[in-house]
Image (cartoon, rainbow, N blue to C red; front, top):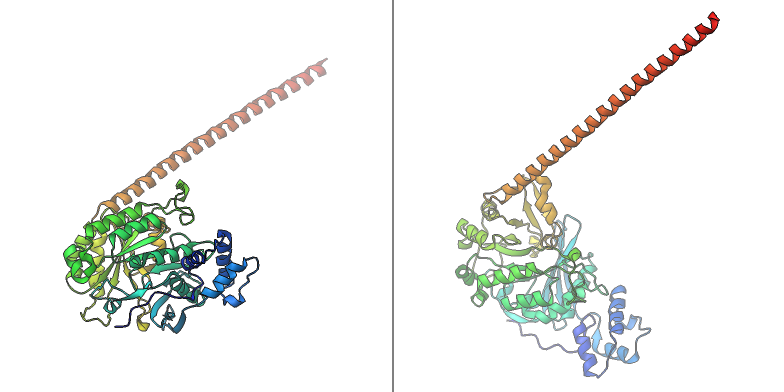
Length: 472
């Protein structure tokens, strides 16, 4: 096993705001927030140059001296840049300042958008039996700067739109550094990612899920469940023994009910206007392992567990990894049958499309099962769980698939009723317009007859007058 990470020492990453504030505090220097903000803004706008090349104009000398003595723009470097044969996925092997390495994966979606999967720890202590990272044990946390430098490296390959914390490590076990990194990601003075474009994935640490909801309500949440009941989950996810499945689902549900609020990072206590509320959908990730957790009985249990909640279920076909316990992936036909059962409980259920398998970076898009089983539609997971495509999902131009729930049937009936009502109203309106037109035509005809009669009487009177003159 690799040696544990030691506490960080200078030089720290120039992107690490918590470390910067710590350095200033230890030196007894009270930096103005304006200068800190301007430093972050200029650094990002310049593309993160070496500090020797940074524009230090207008900064106090003590500010400059402390930053130059304790920080470096890059304390990590990319030692491997590998792209899949179909060019949809690029894996970056990033070496940290102490020689440890983590992986970041860039995924190019069919929509033209790009997602980065980042790591938050070296190794992981959660010990999931099917996960290669879990076999490493925990070696150490990444600093906020080390997390953010993964984004800087990736942005130079392809402009990143979405971030998912689904790489190495359990993000909630590195809470403060993940929080600092996420805050920088959505900060308009830095990376400026949109609210709802950052997703944190967790194996399930209930108290920290609640802390995340309280301190980072603008973050999307994904729960790696992998089994539909406590007993099965404890066998493949050892950490599950400490956190009961019912409590996890309740915490997940509470997070979904917290509105996605613009400006939440800058003003966490601000009021939420109705215009800025968005209904979110949390995501449950369920790795499909050939065996007890993939049975159709488990599909029903999973459906019942999530029924009535704004949850997207993401079925992940298992990718073979080098772990002691050997697992296999069920057939695609079996996974699709499992999907249909869970969908029967009124849930959106997706099968993840594997990307980057040939470079051991398998991670990626979701595939939505539509009414036409032959057609698959790719979606960006972040847009789905942020509620940004919910209208498209719900409406489908009035075509809602019904799989034994009654929910889809009611929606379809409601739509048909609305269509009939619109036709009836349209018919009534057309009838009204036709009646009005006919009345106008009758009015014109009557007026025409009247004019003709008056004209005829006038002509008769004129003729009579001329005849009487002749007789005289």
